[in-house]
Length: 68
Image (cartoon, rainbow, N blue to C red):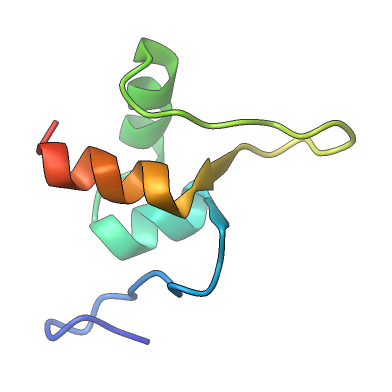
């Protein structure tokens, strides 16, 4: 699934995405997304047994809608 400009879009059926997937879908670099997460402006979790951060799709959409 892609946006009109050809960039990847988030799969709306997924409940969460990785930082890499969020970066690809939004055009915001992974480094910048990690800074935003550390600042508390975007929620992310690292489930037990996983080393990567996961961002709930709803939280990412809320963050995008807020224009932060």
